[in-house]
Length: 73
Image (cartoon, rainbow, N blue to C red; front, side, top):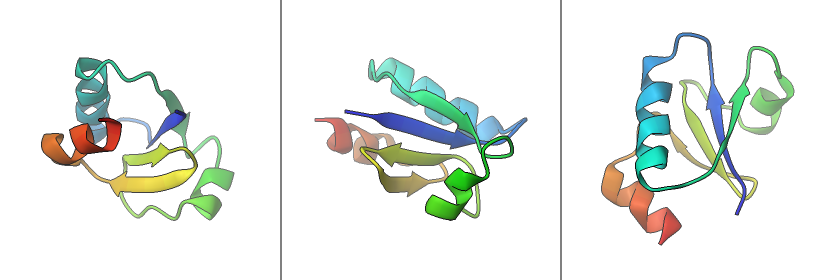
């Protein structure tokens, strides 16, 4: 499973999502969309973070913990 967190500099919501993923033991790649704007073309998020699982944008913003757990169960 490939998990990517689309982030921006100084994004406090991104830190919340990262902690949630860490608690679930999920490995992920952090992608700063200001450095890699091609990700915004592929995944048009209007607020960070964006959570991409296996190439599909699953969440923008902070998901509910139960919804996040369902995606990984």
